[in-house]
Image (cartoon, rainbow, N blue to C red; front, side, top):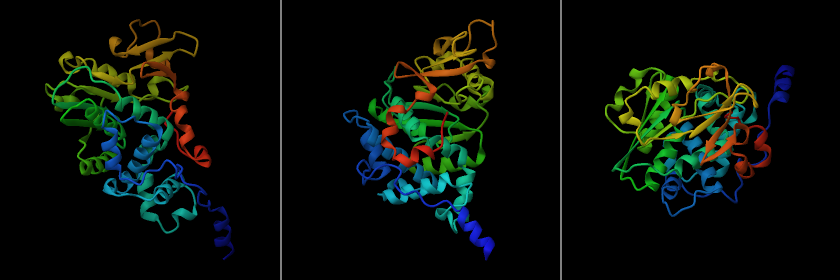
Length: 324
């Protein structure tokens, strides 16, 4: 009895407020929010972005809920359960199966749960103008995780007037890929392949398709060398593909500012140089990323999403996971 009482004292209490405020929460389904975001006459603002993100988070854990009008309290409870997935918490009492899922998809959900950065990135992709037309929008998402950037590309396609979309993601984690395929399949938004994006044969499915947009956010975090993640190695493979596939393709990120230090050998990587150094004076893999170009503005990694932090309820800012 004493041991049980001691363990209860270690339990984290439930969060006292909802993840976003009731004032900006829309009593609509995720499908309805995405439909609205796809209308080029609609401004994709902070409240709409937050609604899309928190409802997609719920749909990822509970596939099929994208058609439901969810209560904000239920969405917030799931975020609460997620941030406490490795800890004792009142909100996970008798939820062993849910805890198992949250742990299995944890890394992918961590990226999505950084709501402010995810909102900024989603908006940039969704509002991008394609550089060539056609009936079907073709997009490639590398390191798909939950597939949130595929959602953003689907919105981009609608806002640019395409009649259909063909979206494919590449993900290394089989468990995550299976869940993402289930979720996106229910939403009619493409599929994810399990493959190594650094290998040329992983792109055989493209055949002779021209790509409108490629997302590749496999960048390491602040103060971490580029070799820690696959970004530059994937880019090298991408730009060795036939140029007919990527002529006119737009990219996220548009460009990356890298350097030996914040003040030494600063260089911009972009599609013009294949996201590679033109000089071999210093190994690119030892450099670090410091900023990415978002809508034409070079933004420090730590500042991405800063303008969207105000839409997250106070106490949540300290507990939500971080993308970079």
